[in-house]
Image 1 (cartoon, rainbow, N blue to C red):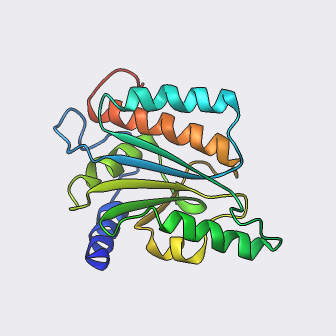
Image 2 (cartoon, rainbow, N blue to C red):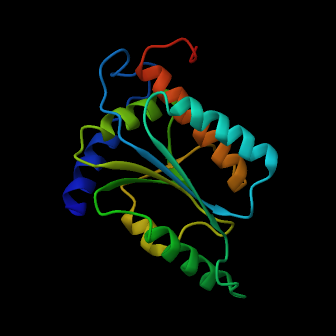
Length: 186
């Protein structure tokens, strides 16, 4: 199932347009539940307020689950061991029929319209949930990289995990407003 899903998603995401239009704007789109998994230190109060605000807005379109995993959960002294422990903790939260989007500085560079198409396309894949994964300070582990259906970057700059999370939730909200043909995205 995962291999078939990955092949379909690769076909879908490789065809993302580079223009400013979204093929789903104003059309009915299946709203998959979204799970946002982020690895990092305890979130600052300001970041948590912004994340909560956008999650409330997103809930107008789909259900959203925000999961935070403390980085270095087993207090490893070695960065490789730290990434391996974080990798295991994230993989424990991923179901076999999730569509997994890895946020990574080496991922595909997409715009807001392409994010909207990614969300819209996911509803046509047979997946039961969209899982977005924000890695810890040393990035994602090998198992997570192999499991991901698509890897995207939010910026050409490397972002702190808290900033990446804020950008992600805002872009997910923006994606849904694009899909619904609303005026938020100009």
